[in-house]
Image (cartoon, helix red, strand yellow):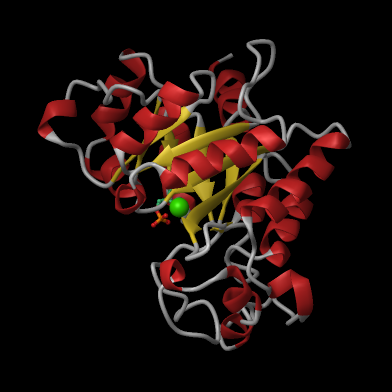
Length: 275
Ligand code: G3P
Ligand code: CA
């Protein structure tokens, strides 16, 4: 019985593709998200930033230097500037056995809108894919990131999930203020509070107001496994980032976390006995 229960706990962990299947394809591109969908990921993760002309694009770093052939801060560039860049070729230089360079839209800058189109297409086939969107450096923009995000989600009918089914979309952030804003404007949207370390105020497992789900980094899980139990006892689900190593996947499964955010959805799904 115990083995059967352990097995079912492992197979029920949600596998979230971090920046898409970002080990195999250039992060935050359509190529990476298509690969994650093909690999069977339960959910997709993306970071969003505002361009100089107010568009939300999926880029992790403040600057585009690492992941494109251009230079400069996303916040100083317009969408048209970003659209002229190639977000795929940096990956050609990495050793990624599964990556065959593809030109065009698959490796150009990805707007949140375009990602939501793909997401909506997949859900229309009946697959319950989910999306975890992270607001990056929202404090610099005094609410503009959240406003734009919620307006975009509204356009896709994704800002007000009903209680009947799990919300297709959740919003994550390292900024409690950002999540508080989201919660105030769209109370039914789940929020995930990302943590790099455990602040003394939160040792008992409580999260800041407006945050529903706990998002500890793998380093916290390794060094304070007891904290995961406290989060659970305080009534929070636990989504861990970024879990790429088999030993870390096993530890997360043993601790009964609800979701794993990984660059390697295919390997993690197979390790958890899902494929
Ligand atoms: O999913 C959370 C994780 O992505 C946070 O760290 O730096 O990869 O955005 P980062
Ligand atoms: Ca992120």
